[in-house]
Image (cartoon, rainbow, N blue to C red; front, side, top):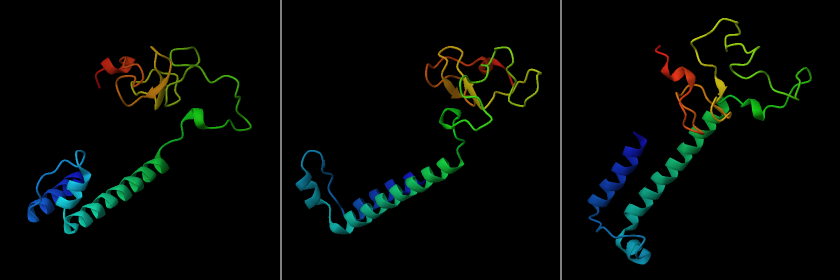
Amino acid sequence: MWHGTIVGGTVALFVLYDVEPVDPLADLSAFTAAVPTEVTIPITFLVGLSAVDAYLVGRADAETAPVPAAARSPTDGEASARPGPRAGEEGHLPANGSAAASTEAPPEVECPSCGRETDAEIDFCHWCTEPLPWAADPE
């Protein structure tokens, strides 16, 4: 919706002021001469608002995102030599903590194909693009 507002506003300004299309990459001086200040200032303002909006959205997402296990430092009671068992190894518990098999995917998993941590909410590893084991399970 925001992108449509920016593009629509830009197109409307170009149409209202009857600006001739000029390739800004071919000749920047012709582009600046063809676009009047009455069009340039609002478009610059809209692009600035877009940058501020992107910054605020990104900052809000970063504040609510969980910290990856690799980025956390171990606390006093945690061992840092070897991480816990991998999925499929003995001693691994599902995300809910029970020993029973669960149909829900854990929030962070290691790809069985490449071994890197991947997002459990998607059906494939975003590193090697191999399907994850629960991708074929009907829900």
